[in-house]
Image (cartoon, rainbow, N blue to C red; front, side, top):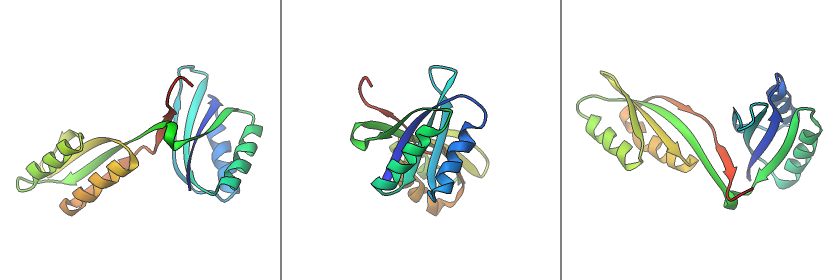
Length: 159
């Protein structure tokens, strides 16, 4: 089962290394990790996506609470969460397939960021599934490079 953890930490050097190290020591593979400063410049939010059973996640969150820089941990409920990912996809493009690639980008509400002689760079924001779907459709055209941010998420409502 996939879990998305929202971890508020003090914005201090070494916090990321300690948290990632804890997951590593417990044998968890982090699927995605995004970190950014919050509305408070002294606090950062880590959005960590891991695949794990319920019980081990509880153990890891208890151990995370013990770390000095950790302020709050929330295992986000998928039903009450807005989650997005950003991807940049560079695709081989020539006069023969450029229109088709641009049409695919439009269907997925993606943006063309760069037009080169032999490539197009596309920016897409959305769910993991949406980005995967566009990537699969672009693959036959020749995907040159893909860069993904990993999931970021926030709870719905006033929490």
